[in-house]
Image 1 (cartoon, rainbow over the protein chains, first blue to last red):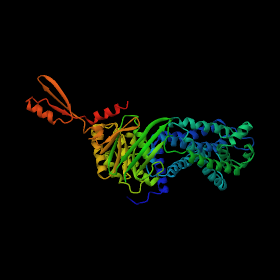
Image 2 (image 1 turned 120 degrees about the vertical axis):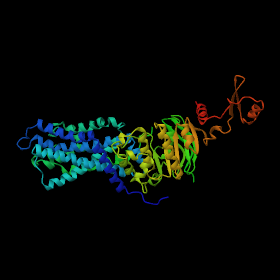
Image 3 (image 1 turned 30 degrees about the horizontal axis):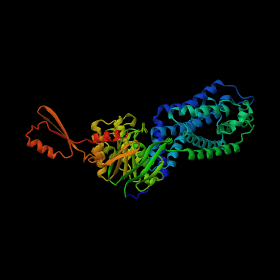
Image 4 (image 1 turned 180 degrees about the horizontal axis):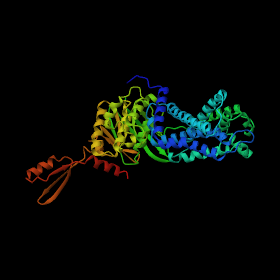
Length: 269
Length: 278
């Protein structure tokens, strides 16, 4: 019997990340839909709603440019992950891996590497559209720093929730439809599609506040819009501390749900 | 120590008993075949042994560990050839074999494994573009790349053409010659007969017979059927030992140009065995 040590989780995580990226890049349909859809929505919304916010000099299209980053991350992290894990369970990827000495952590880390790469690319696309098409001003260094933690917390929370949700998605075929229900609903409630969020009934804002999307879009508006725009937020403030708290809580909730619900194979009938 | 030891294995799905108390021993270095009709419990049994499914009752020891709780060092010692996976469609054969090889401590060289399963010409092809039989050979490559001590093959040659099946048998024999223990499930009697040192027939969640291909179900002691043509009529006699009968026929100077002596084939025995449980 060999006494060689098995490859470390770090090594196999990177190997999984590479394989995930390779497969994603070769699936043209998934790639085009994932990337083009949020950018297309941004171009549509930005073109249709041109009026500027009263006496602030900020146009609706600039507000959309900032808010839509939340939708982009939701798509690349939550939807890609939920559908991806469901597909891996269905096509035998997980069963195959479970027959090898890989750790579950390495599998999840591989997915996380894929999601991070996709989210960076998606977010960059949306920011570029905002900067080039809608003249969104580029923020200063301090704001970029906020952007960095906001981006990481958002991506991680959405990924963890996506993996957790994949265990209740029975068939990969229907995953896209099922996962998009909460995504679209939350986008309407969370100030992404409809802003100012204060147009919504108070109880709907309260409902939205329990979920991460409201805080994500609010945070990205803080990063990319002038300070005067805070008057249009639900609290009239940017509430960065609370944003970090809620997103951090969702990271923990998502991680726990992940650990509790993740299974290599389909549920034992 | 035995490679696989199963005592009183049971598995219930929503009150339906799929496996009803199986005892099974597979010794090291042996090729063991599990035969049985669809729904007999073959795949359920194998998946429990692989650690892919939880059992309802009984004890199971595979390579000295309980598959239900064994860790990754145990997984590194088994090889699983999946029955119906269609993953990694966008990767090439080499990419996928290399990736899975990277999960083990001391894998076989990638090119060697691809050559062993006869896919060298297809190594740069996307797995999506392979035929069904080629796809299964990728599964075998991925199952053996980690140099397993014990290999599980669940209906490995379903959908193979006869030439591919023969080629596959040679591969299994080569692995067995290296000392790999192999547990094989199959529908094909000639496959079990060609490969297995020992076999068991599973029907309706129970083992109804166990033995070598030559002795299964009393095949060795089953009588011989002696048939010949005498004075324009067909004669058939079932005897335990045809020697005396043949002597008599020779003494009586009967024309023996039409004489046949047949013993039950493995298929006759098998059909008889699974028929008995219906």
